[in-house]
Image (cartoon, rainbow, N blue to C red; front, side, top):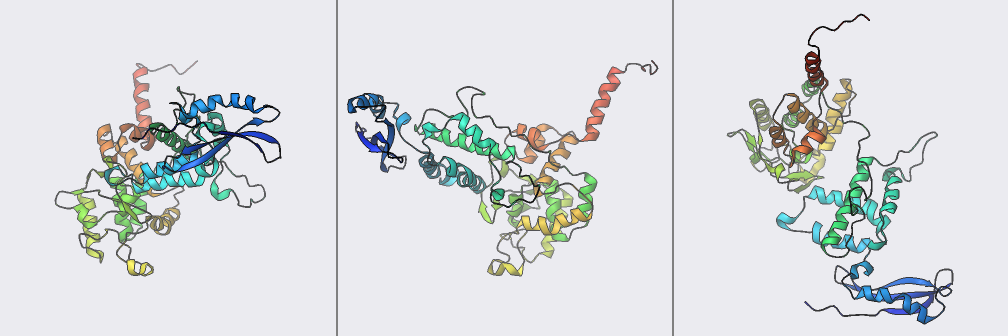
Length: 414
């Protein structure tokens, strides 16, 4: 590896935007991508440093930084430079090192919508914890930025959970910068616990969980395709992308299991979210019977065909060659049934996955079994985020304590 060439940089007098004479220090910098660019930084005004000798003394430490082991502190690397390098090394990987498409899509959304527009031109050294924290507090939903408000309408800030994800994305970028020695600090996490950017991820409301009777009522009102699709989701907890990505060759009727081999998000076929997500899912007799009924009814029944293939004439040449848009199925086939039944809960595909985890927990299943069925990498995710304790279970647990405390009847009169 060729040794880096030492440089002294250049000091010269120039005028700023208001025509005030200022001292400028410039130097060459090699970007993470290998491109050589010219950087400059303002030292101060002519009133502050009246002679060139005074200005030279002031930039002595800057020259030392350029040629020392602490060069990253004076590198001039901007957040945009870091993002380009992150895309090259992390998002454009190949094979097993390549992140799932859904993860890359989510990362790009945060980078393009929030991080690069605000921080792209900022040098890494200039991004400070309090400034990031203040910025997060003021974030508003993108779709409402330019919307004309009605009289009396109040625009709510961006959801805390979304702000926390943006914060975490910034932390991922700084960790990448540390790994490649572009910086030696992460202002998002801080040096010690509690010294980084504080951003709550608390939900604004608890996600809705369906009762068994509500699920039975919804399934009973659906046509065969939607009934099979929804029942499969209710009883396996498959993610939306995994449901869309099922092919008939993945349904093992002989061994009564479903092999989860791919995920389809926005009609992009990719690998599953995590290694744990690829574990096979058990299939019971009732689910197998429903799938057999659908196999006889669908015109797309070859092993390589999608289980839930698009059969709309509007699909044109892609008819039968791509999976259904499950967002469309939810919007036009399932949610109208939910409203007609008078169910006021917010229902989405993820609602059934959460309900599945909650019912497993309510049945007293072993936590490891629940984790494996949910195909989570950690049981903490299963219990802290997905599963909820239902009221009958809480009442029963409370009653046990009451019976323990009440060794004998308590006097009711004063």
